[in-house]
Length: 466
Length: 50
Image (cartoon, rainbow over all chains, first blue to last red; front, side, top):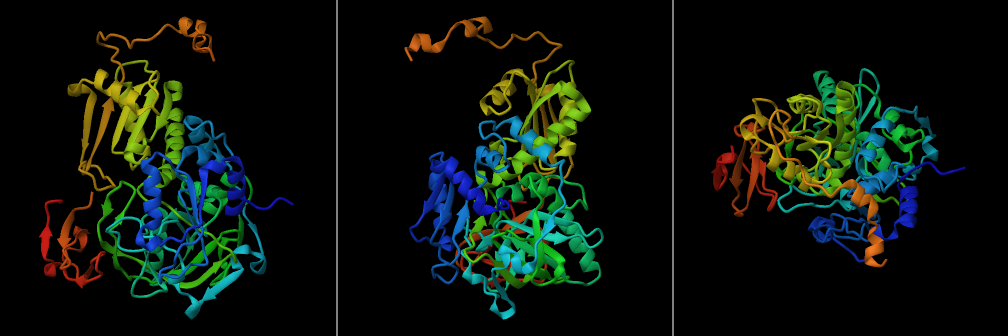
């Protein structure tokens, strides 16, 4: 029988297919002294974004942790494509569309007995819990402290649906059994509000290691009360295996094949200081009051690997960029048909702030209509640029060229004032639409090109002697 | 966009704070030296980021 998909099946498959893109570092490192992020930053500055397994990280008391640390899993689109069972050579729109398609095939999870679940091989509960044993990194200078960056799962108290979201969880220097958590996704906020209105503690779990398709699947824009455990099955290509949690039994299910799960409760009404954190926009989020998670249990595989995201870098950008591209493209195609030809959320905008759309423009003004629809769909986007389909939206140089050549600022740039933005940029409460398509109602020279028949006739190898 | 202000701790380091807790009855916590202090105890408050 084939093993269920989990982090180690992925590491084995990816390591065999792309050994040069999977680094294992045996030398001891101190993640809480920025060693992990410094190594990744060095690589990033060289344009290298391999997945990195740190075999000997120290824990928060400076001892060798029994748990290795894996980072940068999502740092390239090709690696994400591989994780999703898609062609790693197709990293443009086909990847985004492949992602979106997987989101339409939810699968009912299957249940594994608690005593058979790999994630329950080692259990620490109550006073046995000590989060200092984990190799929790500090990512950027000026961060509040060590921070877990993977997903937390909550259960909607009305529908029973689970919501899985990337939520930061800061180690609490005052209590090694507490995390300060930055709940911010609409679904998890709704669940927390429900519990707090009734003065009840909210169960919550952190999932710190699983197959990357588990995490990519959690990034899909699913409707409220749609169960992410079902959705994730579509991305894994097989039902997600669940098991009763240690704390609540079958009242709260956890991924059976996870590497490491932290179970806890969010006490109603409690808020504590957390942040700053160098976050998705490569800026620090301001210190503020956040809910806390009182840890009830830590369960893990015997040889668990802890996963973490290299925040504010490609590892962070890519994980959200791909789902949004597919979702926006499908929405726009439903509304505008084949007028819309491609969508990209560029790295320059951290995969969140900017959206480039290409269209087969039929009439003047069409670009702005498309842009307005995109802004409605993608709440993180602050700047939307629409170009002609001859422009490759994945080539930022071409998009900027089209903007510089085609845009008449007096009519092609529009500002929407007093709209909500989620990020702290100088855009404030504004959004920008730029129509960088070639105007149809004005005389404009065409883009130069070498004739296609000449390109077809000339075989480069004939002239270069290859 | 949330309004921010910037505080400087006695250790000399600065960090951003959400305006929503400008007048809240809580201690800020310096991420560099872990000193806890009230906003009004900051060495410097810089609201130019607002």
